[in-house]
Length: 204
Image 1 (cartoon, rainbow, N blue to C red):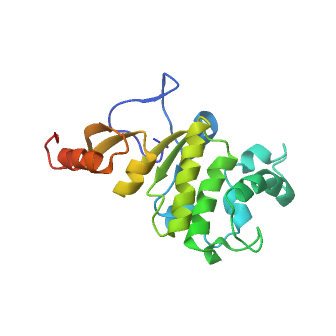
Image 2: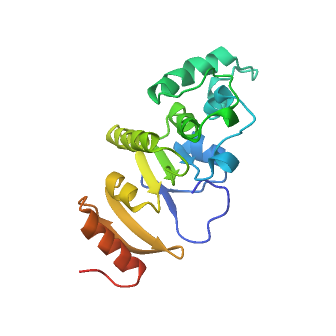
Image 3: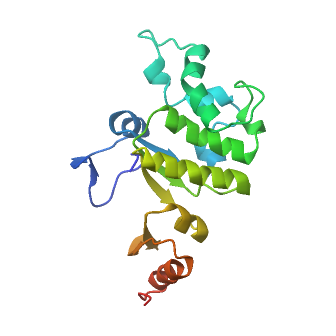
């Protein structure tokens, strides 16, 4: 979806129009798409760089002058409100992000896309390696973003998380969609339907 590799079949349709996306930069700047990676340490963040650099990387092009110059104050003015909204705990925006807790690293990996104002956000396994309090906060944030009009595609293997957050559930196994579940927040009923699709039978 984000153009890191070529699609092998099907179409990508944005706002009713088929599109070809060749890079993450094109996905972000032309179509307002973002991706919060499951592996934030390897894919989502640059651990040796600062909080400011990581949270602002998606808006550098937007904020730079015609000559390509970019001031730290310009970036901090733009990303600061997002980081405060996420209640990021860091001694400084210049703190190396690798020194933050897993929960605060995850907040920055989300913040960089919020700062860019994405309209479609893919969030992959958001609860991996974070504490219960931060997990609950991220769930509230996902609900809030959806209420404000951001389309969220949540990828998760955490059943309670799935049922708490999702409006509808597509069950995938072996890279294929096995079925769709309308989420009525009934944990027992929804989980039974999901497991039925995974095991090749539609649960009653």
